[in-house]
Image (cartoon, rainbow over all chains, first blue to last red; front, side):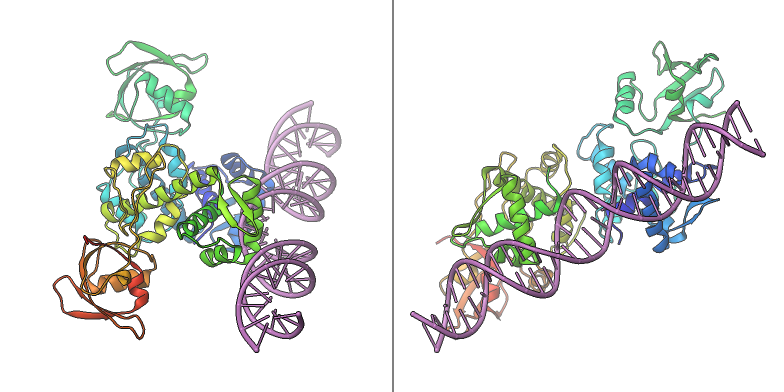
Length: 220
Length: 220
DNA sequence: TTATATAATTAGACAAGACTAATTTTATAA
DNA sequence: TTATAAAATTAGTCTTGTCTAATTATATAA
């Protein structure tokens, strides 16, 4: 088993590896974890030693098979606990991430699988992120953002990319949740702002950044 | 909030404080936690500094009001998680202690209370230990052991004093659980062995140590 | 009461994981 | 191509919580 810190690094590296085409550098990792680049270099050395990652200055950091397997398991635990906290304990959308951040490190061979069964094998967590299966397979995740759509398109909110409390509270205020229908009415060329209609409500304007944080499902 | 280590010390001291009449010494704490007495002395200094305990060489260690409050909360979390693991996730009696040992350290202001509600406010954990209430009140705990009874007494198993896997597996093998009826048939003066009848089964002989690890409820 | 065993304490070391400051590499722009 | 900025790395330090070994204090038994 690995330490809390090692697991957090694996998770951060896994997350960065999902952003295709980006080289995973010490700087990038330090930005995700909010710590010092020097600390990251130390930990990279340690994880290479343990054969959880490879590091090549040119190619950046990559998870080994072993590292990938572990990272996926941590993500699985995190997302299952999020479902539990929201569905069973009645937490709000914006409260669950921080607690799951601790729960994901609880070590027991059968805990994740038992929790999975108890929750009746959910495929997605409350933020719309796919929950890796016990065998490591990850259900399809969404990749089209609201900001990607053509004007006029009607879509369904499938997932959100940001777990910050400020973002999630803003969503609650706008009455947006997983499954909400949104029509993209207009894109303002000047700053990328989006004019949208949420559900059957009136038009609202949101920022480009906001539009890029919402992943959608649309039929055409 | 306190560190994992500080919480484990508080819990150990709380546990020792339940054994009335015993002075809480560094040695006693090191025995409970399985670490070096020198480490205990260091931590005692730290906890005194934080006003969680008092230490007087003559009187030993005592929890302050603040320390008591925290210790009780940790115990509350531990026992609630035990109920969850057994009732909701289907773990065996002997598997839950170790996992609850990790879960009890998850920090969130409302988690214990939400879990308590979700489990419908259980009064006792699966080992028969009382679960402290949100306000710090602790339901009555049992104190009479099987070994304390007079020959002939019929009792009900109310709680067990040992959380070791070997002990709990032995209980499963003997078909003893919380609520099981046991009659104490005979006490062997030589070594304190007990001849008992479990439920409606034949006589069995168990050791004095075993008898002292079972807390019972009896009507006369 | 004195010898001996046990407990408590102190001093010093160590590993993990973080930091700062200084230095070296690499990338970017003039 | 060279100057400059940014990133990576190294060296050294710090904190937490542990340890061992040595010392001092206390309790127990002869």
